[in-house]
Image 1: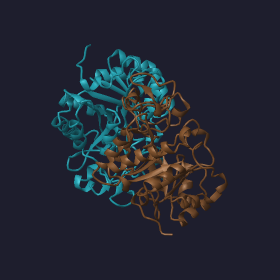
Image 2: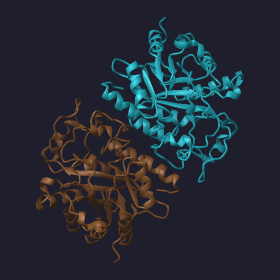
Image 3: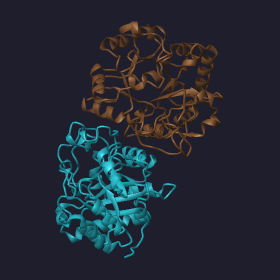
Image 4: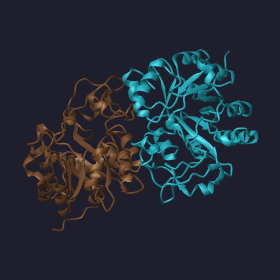
Length: 312
Length: 312
């Protein structure tokens, strides 16, 4: 069952005493999440695998932000306060989105308190996907790889036309910057990944899974309503990912088991676990021998790897 | 008692609902300490006040590193292990210093464990003072300010010739890059600061003090044997700093009192407190209303300031 080999997939594959580090939303524990200043800084610090989130705005422009709606603790009115309601990105044109700035956390909120050391930056906007792609395409080396999460809107999960448009807009931008070999298409929504396989088969796909939903993620509209029901798959989730033509399996850190990991390895899948932030979780992933660790704290993971005799 | 006004001093002065943030050794909690990649990243993240440490190597080149001797937990042999003995920087030529790399922490050491989230960087060397000065001089805006700590070698503390040479070499480099208006000369050794006043009176001086020595700093050869005995000055330390012609007073976070701070303010001194890392300490400094907070964690200070309604 030899599968097509993708350069972008191999960049995430571990090796003997080597586990890869993926910066989550850039590196949200350190830099402002899903921002150009954050991505640039993460790359300059030598973290060359980046995870981030893409949604469309009303005029079809793919932009980089996590939630379908503007997120109260991370969006401010330009020059003003944090927002107090959450319009949907899909209801705002690119030009309307310029009325909001990101780069700050409201540290009085529960969400803000999760990232107490994050550096704060004023006066910046939600980036277009094009901004990050352009930056990566212009680096002197082609060694930055993108785990591009296509966010699936729960309201449109059964809308074939919307899904086709979403995948088409995203892949068109990546092709435009000639970054197919540096990009994974990554989603919780397996129907989106099927659409990717069908309309853009030259891209590798990365299957996000989450069984035990993390209460801390509630309100961040992640996997809850868009993924397949995988509770009964047990340790056979990787088999399903393989059947669907996936190259990466991305289980939540609460769900990964040594048995599941072994099945994935035997199938040739790369296993990248998210979001691994505590020392206990990091050490457990090292013990299991996963391929890649998706983290908000790349420095913390580097230090745990080094002290355990691992490279990254 | 109107004193000469220095632009570099005013950059560190607080204002109504404004406390300045100074990145300690760059920003050691986040980036590799006293390295160019660390300084560049700190500046890019908008932290424009930088503290760092300068010593001379054997051929008289001022270099940026904290200790007089190479520091076991932060120095590696190039391409090899962490060092296991600590030669003095003053005994190594610039060329010999190239056999060592910095940018990593040995996380198995007590020192390493103090900065568990610090990003790690391979293949970099101790920077020359010139590298940082050149970088700052070439920025498009002249808005980065340097709290340049001149480290006083306890073995040479009574050596007038050595002291004159040290001050002369450092100030010559700053003059060469035309950064007098962006530099403070900062030291625990008040005799060094006297020498600065005498041989380079166009530079402002910044007086470091520490009464209660922090056990965590033992082994980092900081103030222990080079400063004056200030234990009996009580809250009158700022008066002594003022008498000596100082522009800044930099007390340790364990030592600062509201009374001492008030005396300093009345004398027109800027009070910058070091090294303020815990939320409890940060909040106390905000409550006191210091001018500037010297920290390894600028993001943490930004968030505490923001949540208390302060700017930086």
